Length: 419
Image (cartoon, rainbow, N blue to C red; front, top):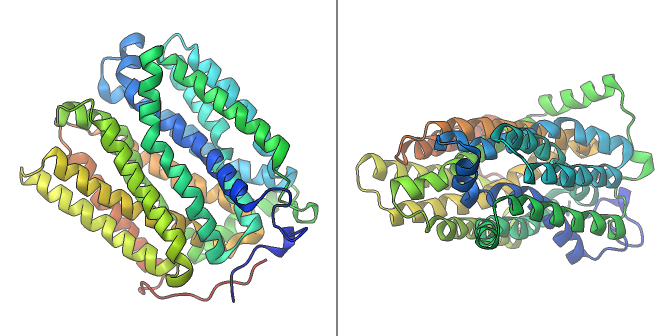
């Protein structure tokens, strides 16, 4: 059956009346960019934050990133349920307002402990930018069409890591690192008004679900017992773990391993750009080749590129250029994997999209953040911990996909009818 917009929310011939398709995609991408900016703008600021707040241990500075990711992931568990009950728009607006306040608290933090606490709470406020955005897209689209929209969203979203470290660096050319947090608050304020003025509610009143313990447990159980949903969620957690480990370690790798501290913003941008290119390619080919063929091939490529990079590092043959080229290849494969894994995980549970998206985001982000933090905290002045983590997590993702698909890779699966 041909994929199409969800008829349950179609009015006036559009699943999001009053908002054109392009504006819808850009708005969804901008919402997801809230998270990318809050992570990647911090990278060039970590040495300055540590110096001003008295944190000499470089690995300890990574908690500026890890604390945010843990807060961001933890909130995924309940935000979807709230949006299923009260609607996507009010829940999203409330969360954005919360994020703005926490950005200001972080900007005025007087100690590292207060900053970390603010980052955890800021992550909680930013969580809606992920889980509710996915729920809104699932309200409007299903199947391969949803994968196409997700890929288009990822193109804009993934451009943020390419430019965010540079934006952070530019901010520090004219002011202190605290201005970065103020800038995040301003960006979120603009988005809050954009959502308020332009985005309609995509969850029809008839589809809203009351907050009942038994129903929530039943919805969570549905995700856990649905092989495709839980399988691709776990696979996503593994590939995300490598990405988060890279984000935690990248500034130290270029400064301490290769001795090129000023090069990392450029190379990091190229790696992010490779993900964006991959997502664009995915949006163009997913309707033809299907999510499984593309994502399974990309997951294998992710593992191969990581293993080759690890082999060069262990053999003493690694250079900054070989590391960067192979990391770009790995990130390219990630860009083909992530939107398809996410769309396939959501496909069989569209009738509980909010709760399902919450649980899946919680597992993939918290699981990925914990794995990434473990990788980052084991940084030892070489690239080996990072590349070993990438390799093991890539192989684990392939193993989970094999179990999920009962030992079969690449085969297309009949699309579920839209709900």
